[in-house]
Image 1 (cartoon, helix red, strand yellow):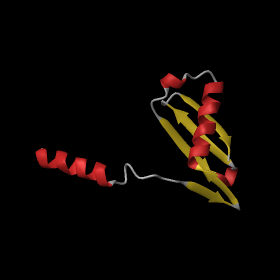
Image 2: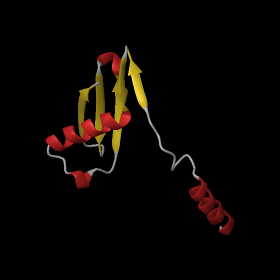
Image 3: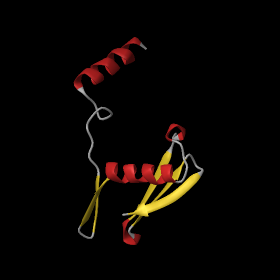
Image 4: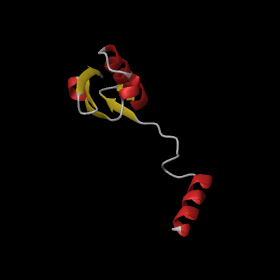
Length: 84
């Protein structure tokens, strides 16, 4: 157990995939959308439907660029979609 803890501290000090800065871009037919941008729009859409920010525990996202839509499900309860 001690070895695992010291390895974890070493990874945190030097960096790891979990702590690395990430940039995800979805491209389709000359359109680029950043994942962070889509998540912010999903959040705004869910909040506009009466969902409370404190209630977000899980968000599933399904990108369907051929339909120009991004579908989402929050906490396995609230579903919706936004434009891609």
